[in-house]
Image 1 (cartoon, helix red, strand yellow):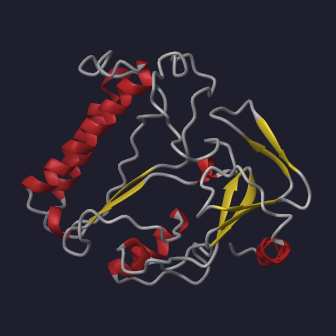
Image 2 (cartoon, rainbow, N blue to C red; image 1 turned 90 degrees about the vertical axis):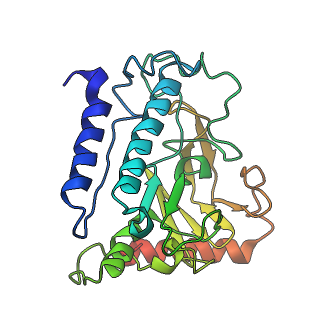
Image 3 (tube, one colour; image 1 turned 120 degrees about the vertical axis):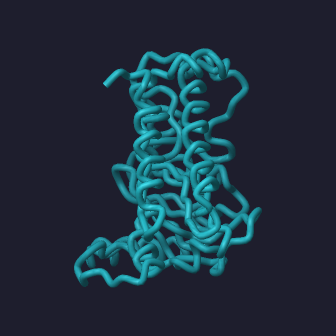
Length: 268
C-alpha cells in the first residue's frame, strides 16, 4: 500500500465491481479506511478542509462516495439500487493519534446534541449517522425517528433479496425492512446498545445500567452511573442531562427486567 493512494484504489475496485455486475443483482460493501486510519489524505485533499487531517479525509470520503453514486447514475442503476451510508459508532476526537483533531476542530461540533461519543453508552456513542437512498421505493427528503439497529440489516436485506436465512444465523437480527424503507415509522419495540457494556432503548426511553460509561469526545473521561441505573427521556432530553430514574420507578423497573431477560435468553 501507498497510504495516500488507498482511497483511490478502493474506489477504483468498487466502481469496477459495479461495472462488472451491472447486469445482475449485486451486493457491495464499500469499507473505506476513511475516516479511520491511516489518516493520510491524497494531495488533492491535504490541507483543503482547514480542519486538519480529520477534515481532509472527510472531504476525501465524500469524494469517493460521490464517485460510486456517479457510477450508478452512469450505468442507469441508481433508481433500483438501495444505498446505505452509515457509521460503526459515534464521533471521537482524542483516540490516541497525533492528528490535531482537537486543535484544528474550530467551531465544528462532531456529536451535535448527543452526549459523549465513541466508546460510550450515552447516545453520542450508540446513535450513528445513517442515510438511505432507494429512489424506486423511498421518497427523498424523509427523516425517520423509527428505532433501527444495524444488526437488523442482515434479516432486512435478506427479505429484500428474497432469500431465507438458516435458523441459527444472525439470531440478534430482526426483519425491519419496512423500517429501513420508511414505511414503518416506529421500528423496534426495544434495542440493546453495546459499547463495552450494554444499554437499552425502549421507545423514547434510554436506560443505562450501573457502572462506568465514557463521557465527552474521547476514551479518557468516565461518567459513573450509580445503582439502580440511569433513565432518560430522549424525546424531551436528547442530551441525556436529566436522569429521571427516581421519578419513574415503573418504567425503570420495566427496563431493568428487559435487560435481564435479554441477557438470560441470549437474544438481543
